[in-house]
Image (cartoon, rainbow, N blue to C red):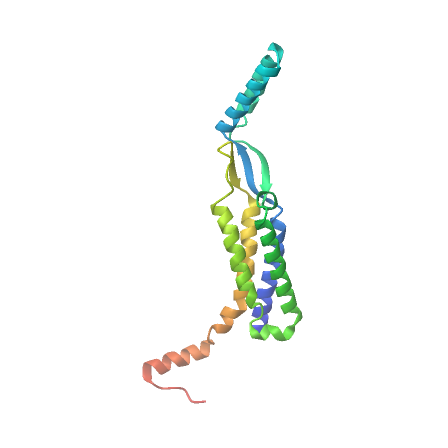
Length: 199
């Protein structure tokens, strides 16, 4: 059973590594215009029209400003982790690649499964989970209040992938450390009566 449990954990870790690598390129944040951002855009367009335009251009700006006002709070785009983070996306991809290689190489070596294979998966999964959690709790700056950012599916899928790596690394190791049910019963009886069953 220890062999099967370890194999299942390694499969889960490999799946999590693939999910983490793919989710770096999925939308992590939705970008929405704030009232301050719309006001700034209207002010800049007015200044440009006054400096370089004529009365006709200024009149054409009225419906444009109205359409800008309707965009307040509406999502106008998305940003992936690859676009938002210059270095962190590379770190996540490297962690995912190492976890995938570790889990697949352990699966290829059947003898390693009895020894709680994939010990480094715990470390890789923990680092990846902390990195993703940090950027979920502390998203990038919203550019002086011009736009607001909201979490999208890519961030949650990255967290799920990182946790699968961590859980896959722990799976066989935690189960292997637990005593068998028979030994727990014997230990309990010995503690109560001082009697140890004889084989």
